[in-house]
Image (tube, rainbow, N blue to C red; front, side, top):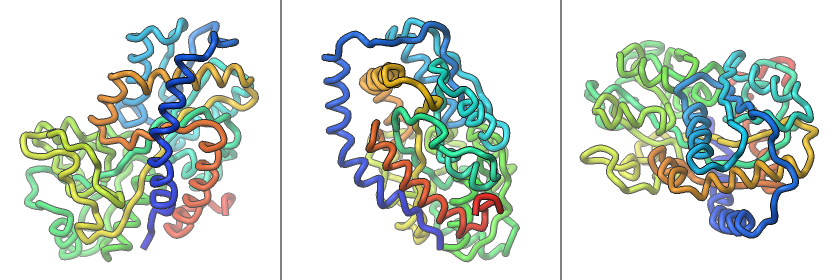
Length: 346
């Protein structure tokens, strides 16, 4: 069985420090003097994933908040670079050493892509700015199917035999496939894993019954859930999501049981963080820390956190760097157990 080591080891600590860090950061933003540096031309905001997915949605929301609240003089331009499971985007930032007009939003493919492909990239090739949130994963099926919970679905997959049911996900040898392998090992099932470019496409494919299930993030499938097209079976975390406001007429995020409750002992949460190229100055990084702090203080951001059922953990500086190092080690274990490591990464 594959367990998400960093979900248990780091999420709890992150949650404990969230309030203190957020309050301190907000006070800093209010009381700090004018920043010594700010962008002098448009800033390229790279998304190392396809359009419509969780990272793309978050980046475009941040872009909109900046415009709405006039948080930056120069425009922020979102650019999707999804090639090579996100390697295209990360390498673009690596190659832009010292350029403060380029930032990237990261997923956990920050770790999985170089490990799976051997591409010459590591998170230390960039400059960490801030963790914006931790994202959940949910097991989804089409609402027209008879499965009311994860136990019923897993039983149907086992009864059908190996490679009869299709699991859709974003990318290959990334978070979605890691969770799929974990699910297989925990339940004795075997899926046909079907990769797509982004979570938006994954949700569309499930609505169209082209796959039998997905492990999409909440924000990537909430519209289809609200429309009665998809059904959430369980969340891959150690505890239920805290949000109790109704998303549909009858259910809130909190009503979705954990997969462990449903007899599927597998959990995994994903990073949503912001990085700059290496070689930027302290003043340049300070501008973006201040900008991101202001974004997280807006009602728009808080509403988005609840809508997408995120764990709204904000972290910067040494604490974020320490978290990244521990998460990288945990992913190396997960990728090795799943057999996904490229020869050059072992």
